[in-house]
Image 1 (cartoon, rainbow, N blue to C red):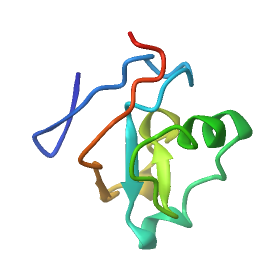
Image 2: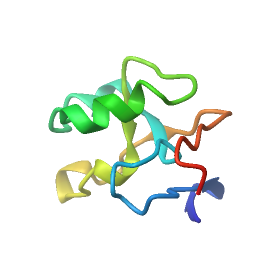
Image 3: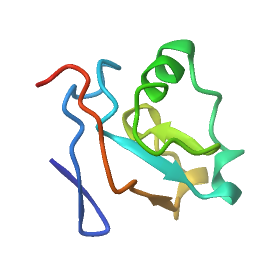
Image 4: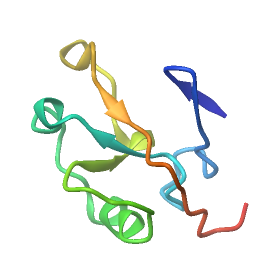
Length: 84
């Protein structure tokens, strides 16, 4: 289980786009710096809890120098659609 500022972030499918347990809400000022989500990620976000306009699956965010300082929040609930 990964940690985001001391908070647990599950990531059950290990980046395979098979669940939504790594769902995060990206700060608005950072969201525009991310590449657009692919259709498979959008499909998984449709199943996530508490989806917002700036929601992403953290396993699909490639961290670069441009994203140094990226701010995200973790929704209070998560949905593990695969039951891992």
